[in-house]
Amino acid sequence: MGITSALVLYAVIWWMCFLIALPIKVQTQGDLGKIEPGTHAGAPEHHHTKRKALIVTGVAAVLWCIIAGIILSGWITLGDLSWFDRALKPL
Image (cartoon, rainbow, N blue to C red; front, side, top):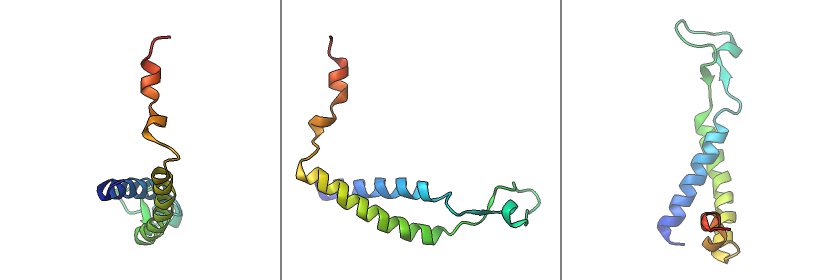
């Protein structure tokens, strides 16, 4: 795995984890009872994005180490993931 591949893998893992973490512990305007006129009650009031980004960075680093270790060890290869070749072969 090259440097570019490693960075792309980390970026994909980070964004996936970040999108999973975004809705966790969000306090909406409806929850706090402070609904601004013209906004939806489900609009976030406190979303703690900076803290979530820091936590996700650590989680993504751990997941990246595990996934990169599996890829570099050769435990799972690209040949193991060739489902399309098997699906297209006639019976």
